[in-house]
Image (cartoon, helix red, strand yellow):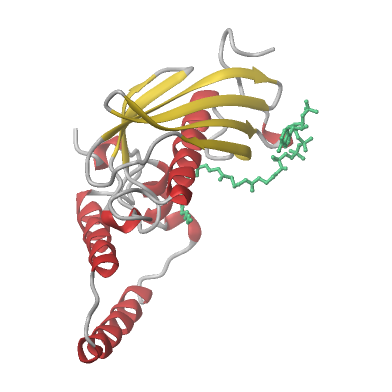
Length: 205
Ligand SMILES: CCCCCCCC/C=C\CCCCCCCC(=O)SCCNC(=O)CCNC(=O)[C@H](O)C(C)(C)COP(=O)(O)OP(=O)(O)OC[C@H]1O[C@@H](n2cnc3c(N)ncnc32)[C@H](O)[C@@H]1OP(=O)(O)O
């Protein structure tokens, strides 16, 4: 199954993934390059022209592939791509690979990017698991950074719902590089009051 086929939506197909992936490559290169002044002027003009070309294809919120791509961990201009390998009602696991565009210090991931990855990964898992569409909201997300997180190689990521109390879902998650714990998160996600989640057998209060 291709990555696009995992997304039950007409707006994300393999061509879109190529398009978004090539933009990720551009972001990586921008982070690595120090163009001389002459090249910079030319590149600035090229980027402006490119932005104008892409802007010709603006669409309403519901038709934006970035919306669906982000929700599935697929290539996205800002979010971190991940793959889910096992997905159960109370736990999920997969792999994540941070790119050069995600670097803070040399060859390690910026801490804010790690928080963003957790927010996206946990938020989508809670929404899938507890059935509130994409509406689970982060009330808090506490991240402990245990060791430097490397860019450029697959890391494991997992999360589990520790408990559900009414509209509140308490979740724990971690990113590991082999046996090494890179970062762990303790989070509370809240379902909006008008969209009580169906809940999961054995988890509710
Ligand atoms: C960067 C570019 C991105 C591009 C995106 C492109 C598309 C990509 C598509 C897709 C991405 C995937 C997206 C994944 C998902 C991500 C999720 C988010 O990031 S959501 C945004 C961040 N979060 C907020 O903005 C919430 C703001 N806060 C609120 O809305 C409210 O405060 C809310 C909903 C959290 C609670 O408000 P109430 O009015 O519904 O309910 P009350 O009564 O206040 O709280 C309910 C219970 O929760 C506790 N609670 C609430 N906040 C708490 C806290 N901070 N700590 C402890 N308890 C808390 C309360 O004490 C209460 O507990 P008792 O029922 O009394 O037991």
